[in-house]
Length: 247
Image (tube, rainbow, N blue to C red; front, side):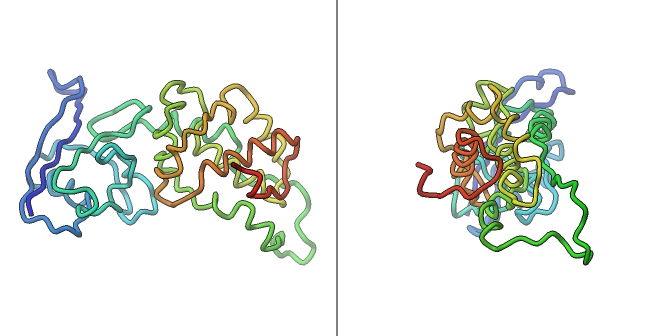
């Protein structure tokens, strides 16, 4: 089958191409099970070596090849042509500065992520037997879903609240905070909840639900945000949040 790619491009180093523009590429002999990333490689290797994109593992683990494919945030390495059809429109993810073509500046995204202290905090002495700090399966279940985040930025850059206000920490940062807020071994849950209580924290979420379907790891992002909101309202830093309480 033949597939037409329409790619949004920008090259600040070439006169006349500093502003975004669209360019089309026709690919022949495409298999329906080919991935979008493979076909972007073909365009770069066979037709236009100046095409720029970011990718690493190409197996849906690193999250580096996040882009808008037919208007939806996705990982190019996970999407098959049979899922998007014979006309494929590819753009950089929204809300972050475009460096070149499909490559965006991820620094603002990671700056927000760092704000929520996305690391384990526990100053108590280690167990005398030298083993790890133990945790029950039920305690682990509270935050197990949010450990799957690969920091691809698909959820954050699908969020209209983030597009409208770049100071909003965004869904990914809240997911990262959730992973530690509900870890019963961690001691900095209250500090994170205080950070997320600020005007550009969790309350800027308008529950639009763009983030959850955008997540390539199927994290229930909106549910996690709701649990953080509930924890702030209850004034708790850790504890079991009943899923039935989140609507």
